[in-house]
Image 1 (cartoon, rainbow, N blue to C red):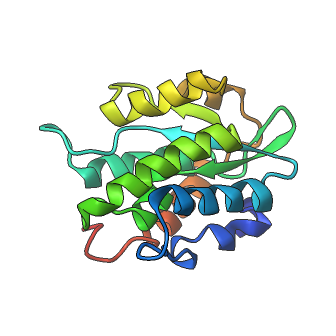
Image 2: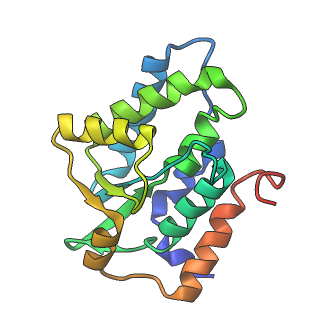
Image 3: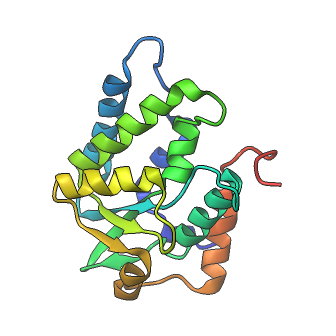
Amino acid sequence: MHTQRFHPCIAKLHPHSFRLNAPKTSPKQEALRLTNFFKDELLRNEHFVYLCSPFAATKEKSIKDHVLEALKASSEMIGTKYKKRLNLLFIPHLHGFALFNESADKRLRDYGLTFTTHFIKKVKPIIAVADGRISEGMKRELYTAKKFNVKSIKLSQLKSKLKNLPTKKESEEVFSLLLNLFPANFIK
């Protein structure tokens, strides 16, 4: 297993290490708390890459299909560098799903949307836009990025500029690890 491709702080990114304080805090307070964690703990000499891709179900694809596509795209970028700096990936389909799973509880949508806005505004990640359809949620993320002068680039263009790309075998191993972060009944 090629775990050296992971950043030393990767354990802090494990979704189960976060706990929402929903009854005690507002969506804005919780979003700010989590955004500060990402900004203060992880952005020392690295780039944050935010994967912007569809999540909501459509007639053609389920949430699960969108999540699997996002995890596959992410697994092909783990351990890469951009402009000589390590890329840390924020995968809303993984991190956001675990924190703000609106498919399980619709009340969490406000937390997720608020978090996304604050994250993009404060952390200023590189927005990697998945090729293909732009969903309503993606439009909102791209609007926020433009409003706060955050760079956005097509995922295929970004990948062509990355250094230290994982091998196919490494990508498959990482994909498997990412899948294991979800409940067993989700990925069937």
